[in-house]
Image (cartoon, rainbow, N blue to C red; front, side, top):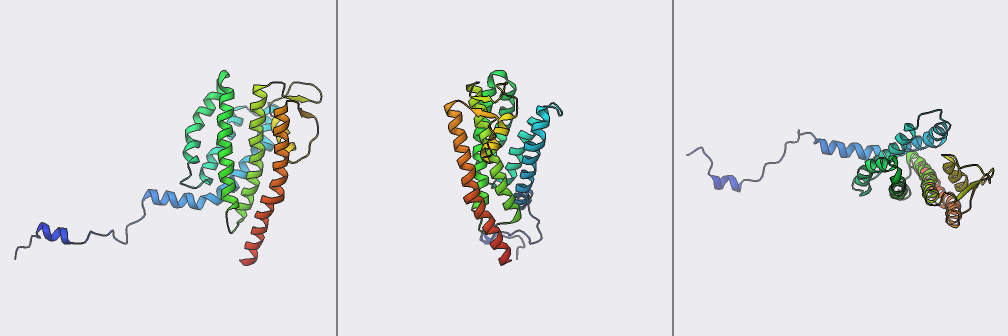
Length: 243
């Protein structure tokens, strides 16, 4: 008998299956790492936000720290959000594609307004998708509870971008109580005090659009605390009782 197998016999044989000992590919390992890192990344994103809002922003504006740190953290937050978002999210490539143009536009004198609008668009998309990832979860972990705080602070950053765009279009849209020129970083302060309904009154929106956006932020802040954050806390307590 001829030991050489005929080509027809070869076609009739079932296709070879990979051996059980074959390890996962690098793509599989990367996907597994991204899935495992999503929840912890929410906590990391919260840490980056807290450092940016309460440390980097005020120290840069008092010239205690170099200004490039401000740009670095503004770029770092979307990059951490890249890990938080689902792997098939269309916003992930958007983050990577817009990072360079945003920095370039804001460094060009005539491109600041376009850079603000592009950053604002990306911030809106990230806020919506992070909120969906947090609030659609049936069981809430501690990381997701912290992620709800991420969304809350992201609202402050989002409205800060809106106020910055309004002020860039209408320089007299905001006025200080002392009638002094508006300092860098004061719109973030105004956004947080408006979101929390603190309202010190030392920085006032005088343009109708600025006032309208301030009202919208104040209402959004109260609704967030009364509904969405309360739901996440309730689900977190339920998950711990069932554990």
